Image (tube, rainbow over all chains, first blue to last red; front, side):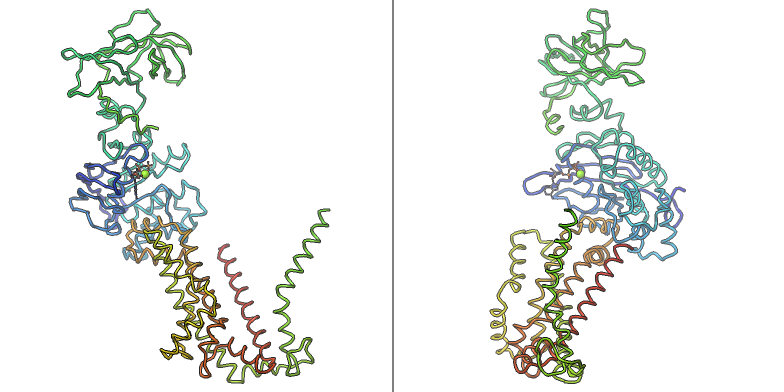
Length: 374
Length: 262
Ligand SMILES: Nc1ncnc2c1ncn2[C@@H]1O[C@H](COP(=O)(O)OP(=O)(O)OP(=O)(O)O)[C@@H](O)[C@H]1O
Ligand SMILES: [Mg+2]
């Protein structure tokens, strides 16, 4: 089964084009000149901290909010001024929003009833949508008789039953426990594959974003910091904020000296260098991923120029390896992941932190990174 | 000790209950009085006052007048009150909506006589005294606050996000209201309807002012009859009304229970 459309033809997603969209509430800028292109059939996640504008963006696409300026195209047609109920876009809410006076079957049938679809066809489609979310046995229950996870699956069925080219989800798993969340993530992924609908998914959980998405748009303070695949965001963060928001990271700050194509940063008396230079006048910092850092005993030989002394403050055995937290002399903390075969350290051990020049990312210390990470 | 307090508590509750319903229950034996007097205890037994209520046109017409007025008021006040409650609920400006809400509720707070004098003065000029329109208008003013309060309470707990969900399913504002909002606030609307009916049906102060020999409501008829002569028909009417309201309320409770279970 690849589709639940009436005609039997595979359902097709529609492309979304948000062009220079801004949204102001009085003097407050909730969306600041946001542009985002989403391919037809893509799974796009909007990721960012609380208040960064994810829901606002989703509401603009759904038609619940009008932009102050900018444009929105869906499937090549401008949607500005089109009311929500004429957009034919499915929406799943964090709070489920099932109609409490209708049973599951009637909830899912609701969009079809509104579209004047006949009874036989309606029942067939409702059954198929409920099948898809594995809730076929619950058609006669009322929402109050379902668990949170079950309610959200019904809400998902209601949002896909009318075959919308686009499905929007605003933290749909936010109220569920971890186990259930992980299972439903896989279910959502499967449904996306089967339907071919364009999915736009909002979350502030970076792991969830990595599991689900084709691409991720990272939001911060009403702006998009970077758009890319999970790997791109992890390996090549465009900003310090993205680097810190996606995955674990160690940030090295200090006095900067640049000579030629080389940048040196003095961290607690030692100097680390990388053969990169930041364009412009922004102050650079180094960002390192945990698996790019390695630990040795002090004085032990190691390759590369970059060595920082420190002390282990936390050692966690992960099965596939170990994770350490290392306190550096300037008081900052480095996070290190070492492979299974590497030497084991204990809390309190003095160590040397080493890394290759090429593994250090040089990013501008733009001051936006820490503000909203509370 | 435990049992002791329980018995005392039970007795006190019984006393309060008797105190509350006794005046009403006294009416029942009086309605079967053989003599034309309202003395208690009554003497003998007869159905004659019930007969009088059904056959005397003064009584039956006033009863049907009340029924007609109260039904119209219930419908008009429920529609207007519900629309007002909805509008006030959706108003952006909280100060304005609060002020308007207060304004709409004043008929409930203003002393009935004051309101009655005002209405009477206006009705004299506009020839509305003793007309069905006059009664319905006056009683609607009095009934709207009850509807407004009952429906507002329902809207207070109604989750507006369901309307957003309905829109995402393809429902326009009106369809969303009809299919989602209305069914969910219906209990509030129905209780408002009941309140409006009762408010009009047993309203006497304004009715005394705007009644005339051509159009009289039941409370006015009861009042004039009891001040003119001690006619036990009043007790018969009282008994009928008491039983009717008891049945309606019992029915409502039963229905509510069934709904909650189903
Ligand atoms: N109706 C409104 N009036 C005023 N400000 C608003 C309104 N709606 C949203 N905002 C503001 O816009 C900003 C972005 O809100 P938005 O709901 O898009 O955040 P979000 O990224 O979804 O956050 P969260 O993860 O907490 O849901 C917030 O600072 C919020 O306070
Ligand atoms: Mg949000």
